[in-house]
Length: 332
Image (tube, rainbow, N blue to C red; front, side, top):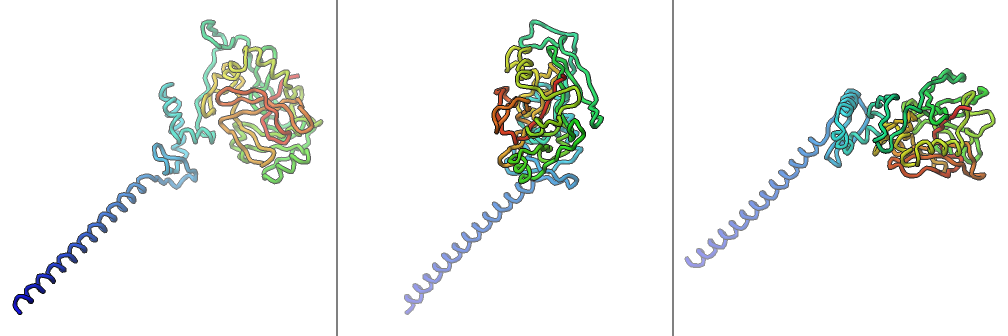
C-alpha cells in the first residue's frame, strides 16, 4: 500500500510540472507577441508627421509606406534649400520623393538662370549664340495680359504659353471641366479650354490647354497681329539650333522639368505642361512632357503638334483634335 501511494504522488507531481511548464511557455509567447506589436506601433508612430495647417500628402523620404503633411512654410523652406544647393546637391535632392512630388505639383522649382546676352563662348559645345536672341513683350488687347516675347532667327515668338479665354472677336471660349463635357466637345468639334486638372494655380504657370477646334476656329485664337505657329515655322525654329536634341535642351525652361531641365539659353521657356486626353478626358504628363499645337491639320480626325519630353526625345506628335494642349503664337 505504501509503495502504490508513493507512485501516485510522483505521477501527480510530474503532471503538475508539465502543466506549469506549458503555462510558462504560453506566457513567454504572449510576452514576445506583445513586444513585437509594441515595436510595430512605435515604428508606425514615428513614420507619420501631422501638421494640420495644410491638406496635402507627400511621400516621406526613405519610408516607402509613410506620409507627411507639409505647410506653406515647409514648401518655402524646401524651395530655398533647393535653390541654395550646389549642382551636385541638386542631383541628390532630385532623387528625394518629396522634392519630386513638389516639382510635379509645380510648388518647388529652380530659379531662372540669368543670361548674359553679350557673352558667347565658341568653345562650349551646343551653345546658342545668344547675341542673335532678343527679348521683348506685348499686351493682348482682349484682356490686357502682357506676354513676354523672344526673337530667334528672325522669328518673334511668345515666350510663354497662351492664357486667354476669348477669341479675337471677343467671343468667350467655353471652359470645360468635367470628363464627360470634355469628351462631348471632342466628339462634336466644339472649341474648349481647361486648366490642367482644373487648377487655376497651374494655369498661372503653364497657361491653358486648348483643343484643336479652338486653335482652328475662324474667330481667331491668337492675339491681334499674331497666329498659331505652323509645323514649318516650328521646324524653322529648330534649324537655328542644328538638330532637335540641341534645340530641346535650349528651348526647355531650366525649372519645373522633373527629370532633366533645359538650359533655356534661348529664352523660349518651354514648360512641361502636359495635356488632356480626348478619349478618357483625364490630364497627364505634367512636369514630364510639353505639347504645343500647330495650325497644321493632318486629317479630319487629327492635327500635328510639337512635343518635348524630359529625355529630349520626340518632336512631332499626331494628336486627336479633341486633346487639350498648350499653344505658342508667332508674330505675323
